[in-house]
Structure formats: C-alpha cells, structure tokens
Length: 221
Image (cartoon, rainbow, N blue to C red; front, side, top):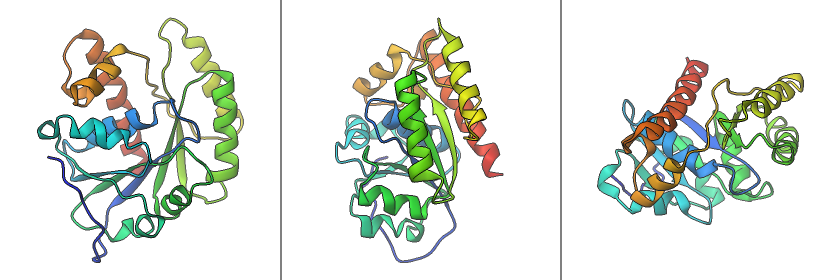
C-alpha cells in the first residue's frame, strides 16, 4: 500500500532511521527503499522521501499495490523535525537530500535514532564519506554505521580495505555489504523492492539487504 502520510500531533514510540550521504549515486535511495520493504514484513513502516529528486516516491508509485509501506514526500524542515510525533508506525525510514547543508537534512538528524551512510568503497567516495561523518554526524552524537554499496564481487579486497580504514578511524561500519547487481536497476523499473524480484542473482542481491537489516536490528535490541 502507498499513501501520502502526514505529520500528526500524537507522540508515539517508534524508531527513526535516516539514510544519508552528501553525494548522489551511492545507493542511498536503493538502501532506503529496500530496507523499508524488508522491515515492513514484520513492522508498520513509513518511508519519508525528503530528497528533492523524489526517486523513492517515484519507485514506489510505479507499482503501489506491491508495497506494504506508506510513503510521505514531506520536505519541509519544520515538519521533518516533528517526525517523532507521527503516529501509527513502528519504524520511519527517511531518504534524505544529498546535500550536507540542507536544512531538511539537519532537521532529520536532530530527530533520528540512527543513521546509515551508504557509500561505494572507492577511495574518492570513502574520503567524502569520512568527511561527512566527521563534520555532520559525529557532532550530533547520533548512532550511525557506514554501509559499503556497489561492491564488485570480483574485487572484495577493496571493500575489506575500506572497512578496515573506517574501523581504524573509529567509524562504525556494517559487516554486511551490498554488492553491485543489475537486479537493483531492474527492480526500480519494475516498481518493486528487490525482495519481490526473481532469479539467482536477484536472490543474492536480496540476501545482501536482509543481512544489513539483521545487523541494524541487532543494534536496536
């Protein structure tokens, strides 16, 4: 189900997960959407697309009957500050704008319980991500983890080196990572989450995100 959820006035207890990176094209929206779909198998989930590009909403709206999540396209910082007051959900996932100086991003960071930061393991991407963590995330004090995305299965050494670099810098990083599969692009075109696609490589792509979801769930319990 897809619905345009709105901010309410009743304070409820739920977790807010922000998906953040200052760059585009790193797997941010793919991560937000697929994690939302996986968590929605057992929880009531709201996906907030606060990215001006609106990619998450576009993806879900292509095939809305295939989704068991609600979606909001709220982008106003004043409303995003009040996500804690949204009622009727166990989890709110926010796909944030790829702009570190965005007021919307700052508003989400102030209310988020945890942050996941997707990034490819390439040195330039990793360098930008480290700067994001040090300048935007750590000062807020919010729980966070880096997630390596678009990982080349034929060259895992780069990803392992990237994980070790982050650990040495004291930056939490997911043990799981998301490999690069065409199935992710195909899922967008089909208007479904990766968990609803079929095929061997698709199953591998789904498994990657299930491992990430499991790891986050362990952090929360």
